[in-house]
Length: 195
Image 1 (tube, one colour):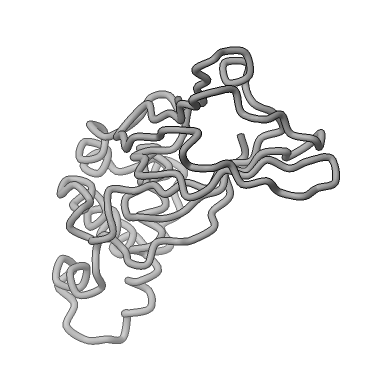
Image 2 (cartoon, one colour):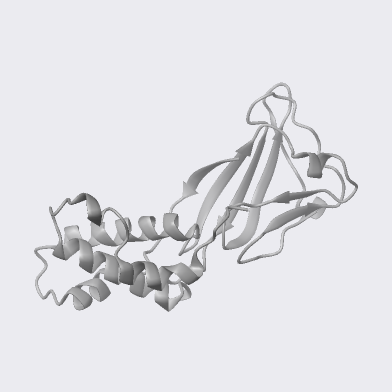
């Protein structure tokens, strides 16, 4: 599966005001830098935890259904992104490259923090084109509000923003890893496997 971001988060889990208060910054001279550090911290911690912090939409493209979805009356496909909220659409392309939208009544996809899956009531139709024959649009994240993100992940973001702000231009190789305090805050949320 190839994930493609189609709708980025509308907000960050940590606001500029919160980050400036954490950094004890009064002026607005560094607002652009701090905002960039917030985005970078979210992306870094999302990669580390393998979780998405705020609601966003992704497209999963696959060439064909996995054998578990092709060969059984009750077909299943695993969703590798978490936390999973919902399926927005499933499209199967025919040989002419025309997308056929699967009716939502033909599958079930309950929300899940981990191990989300789509369960089909019958085997889904096979794609007619060889590559990228299936597109699954999904919505992931803890929620649309910043406060939906668990507090320790928000604190990890603030700690990482602070670390980067204090150590600008200190590019030592031993600082490539996450600072220990950040890792401790984020580790309970880390998914060791994608599926």
